[in-house]
Length: 328
Ligand code: SF4
Image: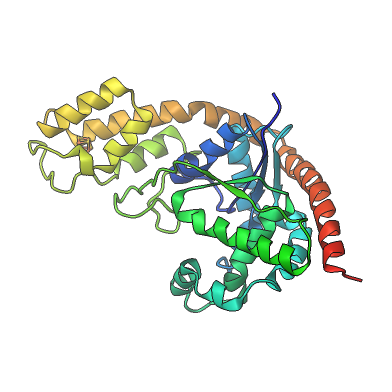
């Protein structure tokens, strides 16, 4: 089937993916392959802005790549690579930074937020982060970037940078990317309060064993008003119920919705059922992951091949950019 355009997306090398990554990005990455020529980048350079201890960076990059492959990425058609393996992106970042007003970067809410989270390491990389992201996107002549509604300003920023570049150098070599609005569910952690994240230790790893998964699920916070088994619950404010809607059959979801409100089902049983359904859903992923992991060098070879293919596109773009800028 002919593809209808090129999609680019970057994912951080956070190691083993968790349920939030899986539902928010990875499933979508896999689905997009049917219609688009996909370029997926594991953004190790971006990670350096906030990761000071890089001892695990290599392993975390490998684990993320392995999870993506096990989830259904098809490396024979999709390009998956590590950002730093295609160094042209850093050259484009430098060039694009010359057409980006500094005030615009320091005014971005994302910069303010990351600076607030890392007050002892507010570095230049954090300020330039959106420019590096813009370079990632335009280097591969991207038509569309899949984004949730909250990330739309980043793409708008990239479009502005492209316009500034093309205007300053009287060219049209860089393409303004479009947005592919994606329904990205906000997955709360097992605390039922914050977004699922490894740093908050409120996550459930998708590669965990069924027993580990069950243990994490049993720790999930439910309706806080429901103190005793005999109290009626409210599924509308329960994170377990939100996830049941994704992993459990409609019929069972309807039953839980009714039974919870009249204390006909207890939270322990409800969570056991969720763990069972989650493990069932993740089983093919886990089997495939174990198969790939058992083949030494396979992930590394796929990443090397991805970097080679991405490098060919990048080299062409950067040559056009150098010519447009009239670099000697
Ligand atoms: S019974 Fe299920 S849906 Fe109701 S509060 Fe407990 S865990 Fe949540």
